[in-house]
Length: 220
Image 1 (tube, rainbow, N blue to C red):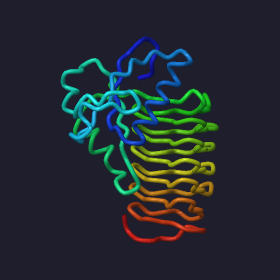
Image 2: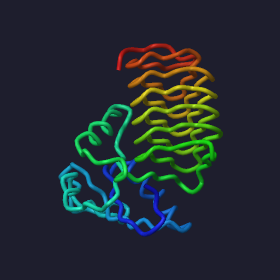
Image 3: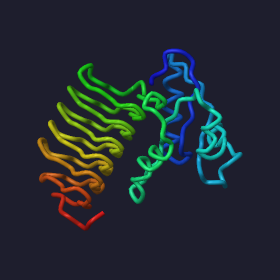
Image 4: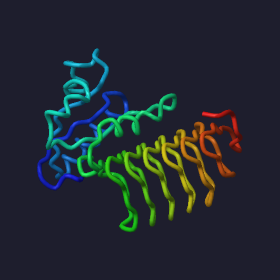
């Protein structure tokens, strides 16, 4: 859901992506949205009871049982562990309508584009025309998705990556910072594209590709 009236929100994951999402929520509130940020939930006990950038860590994900009306956004995933979001979402077992969609006010989303529940678009992301972004996708700052791109659920697209038109990205893929993907290419599910890679060929599922032009490095 998006915020049209005041609604409570918790961010799952108090790491870098979670903190960036909190800043996007603050930016949205500054231009008229009404999210009431309750805090973080994080399964690292060392963080419980602390505050990060002024936002409390309320406990682990088990605390959601006492928050039946609170919206949720799952903000985990690093290049060395980019499969965490689907595992968390599966374990939570929440209906899609419980998940917030967070779009930074500086992002540009064409009216012909769509963004799924639980997805986060950070500052200056651009969706140009008829772009489809699935659920629980992380789109970092200055990412450009051009016409007719389709991005599968749980994918992460790191800062500054650019996808040409009609690119297909499978679920749970990771596209590294500054990567360029040629038009009409496909990136398979759970594949990883390295930082600064230039993708000129289709990438099969479950493989790591890097370099200029990008070549297969190993399985994920």
